[in-house]
Length: 189
Image (tube, rainbow, N blue to C red; front, side):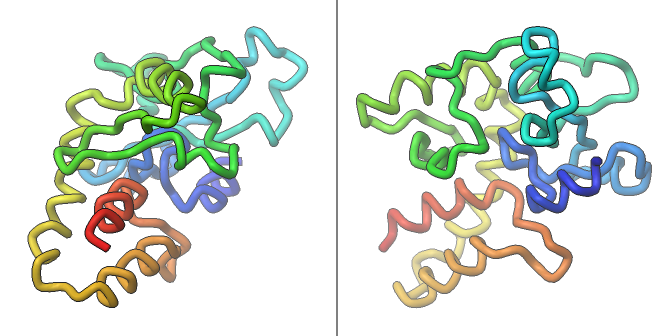
């Protein structure tokens, strides 16, 4: 199950886009740039027991720990816990989920100004803890790695970089926080 979810998601957390690994693989799970994953129920199994084994309700989320609950601050699936509001949770399964969010160069995830999307985006950011220091700092580092060279890139090179970040590598993985980096890159076009 883990392997299938990881492959489908390009080895990124369904909520924050951090690199995740199979928590049963201790070598991968101990890498500093990744987090072990756990199986997340989009619609909580406590409230939707009929969906507990429905593959279409399962996602791979970060912050799996050897103990039941990870240490604070919680984020993503553990922060969400049993929260589910169809109108306020932006589902990672929505084809347009990325259109609800924007990113600052400091690594913050922010709701877009669109009044039809703003409330759901804000509730999702808060409900999943998507701006905890660790995530914000990691997004910022990913963005900074591009900002260091952005001034010497042509529009064509920026476009090529965006296309590369939008694809999986030869191991089937997306770059961590690629959506944040792409958002910032697009602002330079």
